[in-house]
Amino acid sequence: MTTSVYQDHVSATGAHVARKPWPWAKIASIVLLLVCAVIMIAPFLWIMQAAFSDAAAAYVLPPRLFPSEPTLANFQAVFDLVPYGSFILNSLFVATTITIGQLITCSMGAYAFARLEFPGKRILFVVLLATLMIPLQVTIVPQFILMRQAGLYNTHAAIILPALVSPFGIFLLRQYFMTIPTELEDAARIDGAGYFTIFWRIIVPLSAPALTTLGIVCFVYWWNEYFIPLIMINSPELQLLPVGLTLLRGRYSAGAVGNVAAGVTMAVIPVLIIFLFFQRHIIKSIATTGLKG
Amino acid sequence: MVSRLLPQSPLRRKEILAAYLFLLPTLIGSAVFIVGPMFAALGLSVVQWNLLTPPQFAGLANYQKLLSDTRIDDIYLTTFKIALATMAIKLLLGLVLAVLLDQKLHRWLSGFFRLSFFFPYVVSVTAVALMWSFLMNKDLGLVNYLLGQIGIERIPWLNSSAWSPVAVVITDVWKELGFYVIVFLGGLQSIPSEFYDAAQVDGANRWQIFSRVTLPLLSPTILFLSVIGMIGSVQIFAQPQILTDGGPGDATRTIVMYIYEQGFRFFDMGYASTIALSLFVVIFILTLLQFRLSRRWVFYQ
Image (cartoon, rainbow over all chains, first blue to last red; front, top):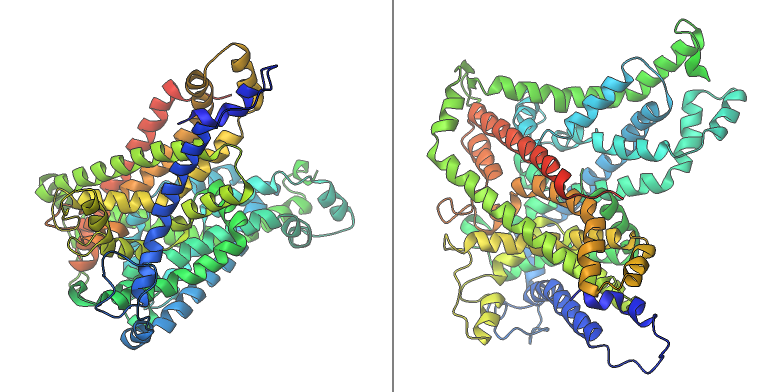
């Protein structure tokens, strides 16, 4: 299976430029890739046909790409059953706020670690990196109690506040800031610019790629987050989309297939559109950093 | 440079002040929401508290409970089995697909493959788990229908203790595979072609090139993926929660689901914290172990 990769190298050796035989290895590998691609895509197609089918036809076998009598009833039902519009708005609000917040706090912190000298710098940086090791499950119980005591349980603040700080984001941005040459800053300093001016006018504009990466990774993570809203939010009208989707199943998971399928479809389509537009950047951002909030 | 000035100089003091102002949000945030709760969890592990009555000091009772809890052994075992299976499959399949993708393909074709492999990774885990819960329905699901076409009997994916962990693994592999493929692909493409040329000159065949050149040069990528993959897989929660709710019995209950159950369904804050701390220790040891073992097989250029 690995053979096809190095074909070009091998054929480049010979003086005999005779016509190459059919590249069987290459064809086989493409067929295999196509099979995998179909396995990745088919579930989405299935859920979409179920979303447009009436209750009796959703599970029809053999599966069809298009329902024989397409209906929008499931989509209507989604909005009748749960506050779906609120889920979307809540998720947008929470993910956007956290992303903007992280970009601000992380770039500020990263600037201090990358460019300024102060007592305790080393130890603070080490402690911050060490917190990356602490699993969320350890801190979530005390956070839950804290939010209850502060009267923030069942509010978006309970999700947003702890997420405004990201040691991972600081580390990511610090690494990038270190690569920016200091000449510009030195020149600005001679002109009398203060630390904030240098940070805001020089470092931030020069760091657009790193900030975009952190922004994308952070937004995707919080748009999809399930565990924390499940714990911190109780009222359906305040719930975020990932947990909201599961509410469509109803008690004892007895909800109609079509309704859940319609809810899932509406959640997936916007992601698909954004993904198609920015796929290069999204894939690169997530692949270089891993998906971490 | 400013930093070389004496500590007493006003410029120096200004820099220190600026640094702490820049760090202020981070310091407050991590103290209140990470470091504080970390110590609070330690404190909670020695109390009994259900949030309704005042907390009571319980000594090591929670730790004793942890050691004598018969459910937790099975739950940890299930978690490790699922984590190991999904990680092994993702690493192996991810590598194979990345190698297949790392060849001259038409731009559209390779773009299409990347897109279709990676897309499930950016979709929310809830949407994915809900989708697969329908696809793996025993009587009406697409998976059993397709298996039926090749003569395989219907598999009770979600309601048998033998198959439900498999269902969790399939769902997780399907969602996360694209990430592994893309990261492996990045690793493959960063290998300089001189290595291949040299191997060719020495008359190595394709398998030898792969096993003696590609794999060793890819070993740091493999280590990176197995470390973050392990940490993530041991904490798997949403897939089993939505697919099977841990069932049947505890067949797919993972350790994070157990923390959730104890803490947020039974409101046993002390015991939930104790289990969470045990998970911390487990993750710490596993990570350490991976780095230790990596000295034997990871090769840095």
